[in-house]
Length: 140
Image 1 (cartoon, rainbow, N blue to C red):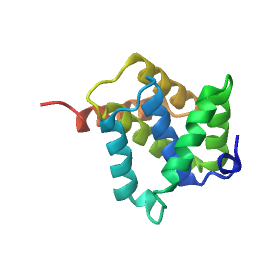
Image 2: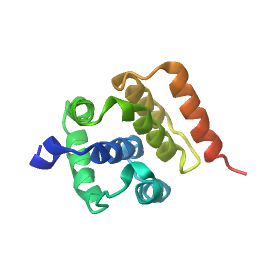
Image 3: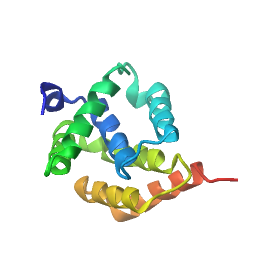
Image 4: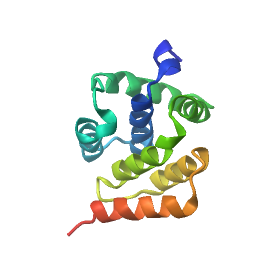
């Protein structure tokens, strides 16, 4: 783990969970990358965020996910550096990224389930967030 991973900003943590949702199925799709870029460029929670940090955060996520207990370490970093008031935001952004390519794969659903558990989200709130993502990315 490098120094960057131990000093993640709240915005870095949000980027990390979006990337985790994207790489859950071992492939980052173009739609998912575009969704992350658009989210970072337009949402108020990323106001003033240096988008160049996405590469640094990406490398941290990829490196940790290669390690045996890397997912646990990554969730630990997120819980340590992301204010609890942004846990639902993190989950919502992850759901949006996972849904952005029009398909939710089993591995992505398992990652989202793990996020719900690790971020200690209320099941009813999580269901509402998931429904919103499905509605936003519904195919015609």
